[in-house]
Length: 291
Figure (cartoon, rainbow, N blue to C red):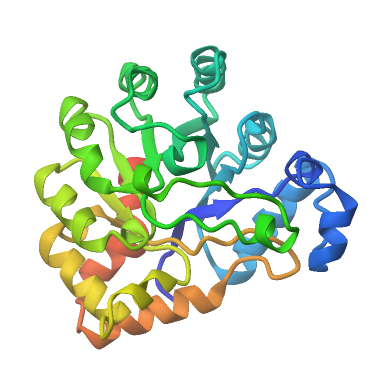
């Protein structure tokens, strides 16, 4: 088993489920109650051990739930890196973002322009980048492309997302303005693969995470996951790909199937062990060294 770090896991905490209806939501899916943030953190740590995963990013999956991830990171600082969602359109966005970064446990700001209805070049979003640039070691994660939240869909909750806000090309001016801030685009751009490649070609601080089922491949007839890795390696290079799974709930836990699918794609295109180690492990360690 190679060394593995996972750059994309969701920390589905009790406050997260409360926002979706609490026990009703859990019963609908048949998922385990998360319990306290401490208990969920311990379960994640044990899950990483079970799959021989060294470290992972834990994402607070709604604005205002950063405290849950802080608790997890403080409890297992050598295992977890804290990511937290920010909605720049909220009047308290700067205050809460500053407070979150000041904890020292949260190192990546997650932006979802399609979900929260703003342009990435909006002055409110750029103020978030200013905060990231002011604190060394802070990255910005920006969800581009198709955004489908299966939890909300199954519960019949509205998801009025604006796909036009998700084009990675819109990031080019911002990424250029903040060259020292690592920018992570998940899911290879989630359907805007060509545009994501253009962005990465222009901006050396842009990284891709490889997470999820990458179901967006359906929009590119004939394109395979192996093709995606081959092209991403050609354009972005091996130092800017971060392995991820998009794991989230229990009892499923860490999604090993996603790892096996990606490992098979890398094997198919004949990726050397040195490059595989960068994607699965080293690039994460470089951007998020153990503090």
